[in-house]
Image (cartoon, rainbow, N blue to C red; front, side, top):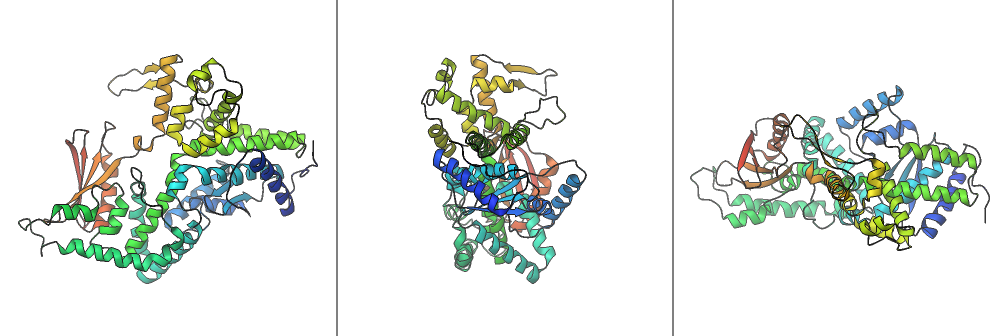
Length: 507
């Protein structure tokens, strides 16, 4: 049964947005079975959208010169026509905040609400990485606290001191997350209230640790009990920002709190880095399904449907490797293609599907299968288990070995049974963050000597660090630690390949 049109033409008002939201909700929640946080939709200008870009998409953020730099660069490219703007930004919070641009047509507003307010919203609420690592109910209150705290520090201690500290903390954001083992999810709503109690506890632990040091910390002094030191310092420690926040000898309480703010922001964004393909694929599949359903039921006309198809096609377009627009695999394209392929395999499987996708092929319940997958996988595991030969053929995927010692390239996997396995495994590895980011941990501290902090980079066959970059980042570590820092690069057998040092006097 076809219903009345939700809108006609490009113009819109807030009552039109409400009608579209309600119609989308009936399909997304009532028919598809999505579970979402309450929605809050805000309309912003193009300049506000650029400003949100610069502050990593957050509605409230502390000040830092890098955000202004990003804004100027993005605005310049946009004004000259070198780049466009996203149609929306969505915040992993409860309520889930979706920003839509005032310049969008009503068709685009409908697409954006389906994509962000229901697709991304469902993924944020249900995927295990977001459930384990983020606190959506407290993030907005925490952002208000963080901005106020840093602004107050700028008034008290000077902008230069605060920005210098933020520079150092931002340089270590990639090493400011708990990835191998998760701590208790932060309760961001109570952070401000707990700040004083936390500081008193941390200072007590800090004093207990440094009380074990002999005066002067000479090399000949007796070593403090190693088991106590390692227990108090929680070594080895992958989260370098956490270690510095808790244990750096010379940091003032306000400096530790700023490190904590940056660390919690890094942890908040960590799941998004793990799930780009799945997150965008989910949202694109949802908006595609919803818009088609709206057209089937007569709630949008043919003109709006064609406008939607044009935008959708641009979003999921995958440029060829020799196309000037090529910038790697488009996460929207790959994610959406895999979701549609899984839907097909659930309803109309062939023998290949039964071999490669045995747990869902022919199950007859595509939404049940997708809802389970959206909740329990991240990009690397999703691709490793559900990338089918059909999608590999559509994307013309193959595996190349590029050995720097060999002047030729080796095509190591093509479209046969062995090749499909190899391509699936190789592509999954490209979405494993550990294969792209250096694995650096705090290894030890020379408490009985000169208090040197010793870091270790586990190369794991991925090569050594770039010397110039290592030197710059180590300067920030040394400035935060307050004493010299040594970074050792070790192979899987524990042999030291290279060493980098930075003195605390370098700022």
